[in-house]
Length: 384
Image 1 (cartoon, helix red, strand yellow):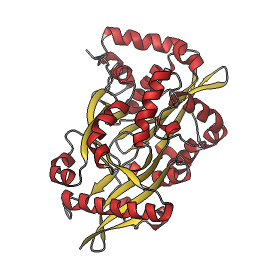
Image 2: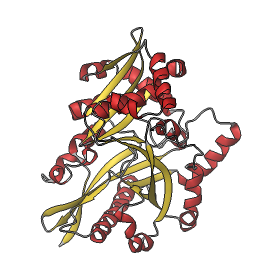
Image 3: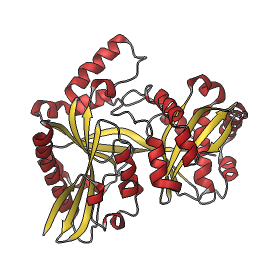
């Protein structure tokens, strides 16, 4: 018999959970524990286990997200008119939302099942039954209605798109989102210099110029003690970048990076940029099997342009991936043009959405596109 169980505490997860998802750190208890300790205030976590008799055969990570106007739009540089439009649109979407996946990271890190013992259709039906029960539990416990359901971040060639009958039956609409920027590490890149030699003249000169502007910056990997000691400054730098984003659904809490470093140890890396002894920027990485995942970063805007902080971070991320023999580096979405300039390629992604209001569900695709507009950008081609 196939059935689901809902867990709201990591300590209650079945013992075989990590063994089933050992390919993806974002589904493992160490990462989930860090997020339980330092999750955004508007996100809470549930874990669905799908069982065949007594055997765990599938898992799903579900986030309950409470959307508020001040968290959705925080780009204070927008014009008054643009702010009013954004607030008008967001009024339709504010409220409680269930996300199958992880809003805090780009990519499909929400579901996994063993196809040898359960079909994809059977798995998805159990996940949807779990969502229905979660809706009831949240209404009973918190007196809140779930307004939106989302299945998050699937590449266009993901097999989940073959489940047209499932998505149609549950009125889940497919919506295109910004692509995930990914750079494959070529097998012949033995060292970072091999990567540089593959750049064409224009982009090799650009690399040299960026390095020259950062010549006075000291780049240091931070251990747990340094991450903890720098927690306030890391948060300040993160918040500077986050507040300039066009759309946000959460704000990280202070101490988030400390919690991840403590729980993930060497699988979570924090690198600081220092100028005259002052921390002016940082970036973070998550080591996910043979894939290097970029995570949150931050910088002081005073030094960003003159020292080319962001571009240097992108190069340093590539350097780490190549030197440590990763197969690819996930640069995630946003800032797609500059990421393509270091070699990342756009990989199209889709989500599935449903609004509980019939009219809103009909209009959801258009409203989502207003909140997540297609960006006009020119893809760069830095290699020979």
